[in-house]
Image 1: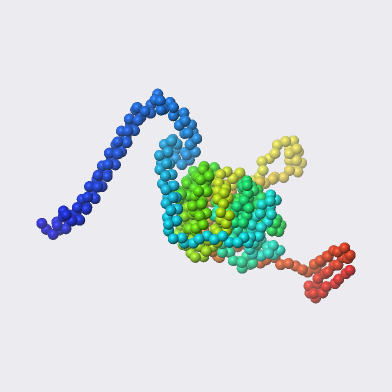
Image 2: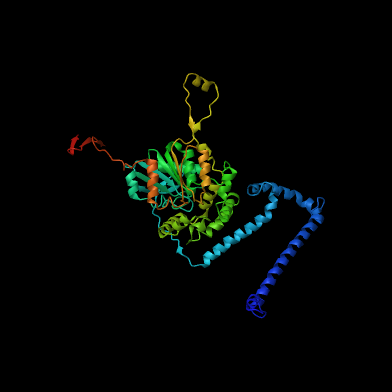
Length: 495
């Protein structure tokens, strides 16, 4: 036999035995699977012919309850082809849920057995707080110029698993000084050092922003800043307190993923960007919210610091991943998360997750600027007749700027497509090659672009003018008027 034949032909008693064993094992497995499939089909046919008949006892007893369950499960049609009955999905749903819960469990076990990268610490309370009309305390933080020198005031609610310390990450004080900007951030109820709210909703969130603005001496109109899921609180401000707002700045603004106004294509492009784990978390928040604390306590409320994409089940592009793996981001994230979870209470996080996916009490289409519907009645007709009636506008009248990364897989671009469609007046700035974090976190050039776009050329802080200023001091015995003459710095006192 030629050497070529010897090399290509396996010999018995060597490695060839192992190859033959593997071959026979694979073939046996294939045959076993085929036999199992055929056996299953036979069992199915027997059950259909002898058990599941219209006049059988089982069908008569279980038929009505099963039909009732089918009606209650009609919401599953959102995730099934149109020609499928909800009950046909049960086998798939059980399998998916089984593997999903197994994945949650295995991930948690792996996190517990692997060496901990960092341990979360709880820092002593140090926030400035205000007392709200309902008796709650709201913690806040100020950056930039003082209230007296502020040319522009910004109030920024934070996103999920964040705190007042986030603000606009990496925003330089020198840039705020250059534009005369005062930035106010606060802890939403139950986060950081803010007291929980017993009946929290987006209307109460807008009320908190309103009370905060007056408490920190923002008497003129202010800008609201919304980022990621924190944008829903900014949307609420646009809806409920529009008269107090000069405008809105949104970066990767989240909308309700169950927004009924979304088209099928917008909804499909949104959900396709998310991980299976994130989809399940949204479904749990909408349908079974009481299960959420279990998962929260096994992740970011466990006291251990892990990767943010694992905690929040995020899909991230390359630029986002490079950013979050950097030391600057990691240190910032750790301190922000430590402040966010300081109360170790899962309820506020559960409330925040529920707010994201349930009815907001309004639609973004309500913010579209349009004329109010004309009233009917003799009084309105007389006003129209004699020219006393004026067209009234409804919606948000101020400027609305939106920046959206086109590589964002946390808040997909399909969400801003919906926003742009229902609010035609919104000024949308689409950012090529940017993800969810890269334009908002630690990007000096990006922050300057936002300020230049919104505020125009920098003019610095307001300058207090003391020329010809009179200071009147009243006392029980006398009144003293002091006049300051700036050129000669002379003071004249009249008693």
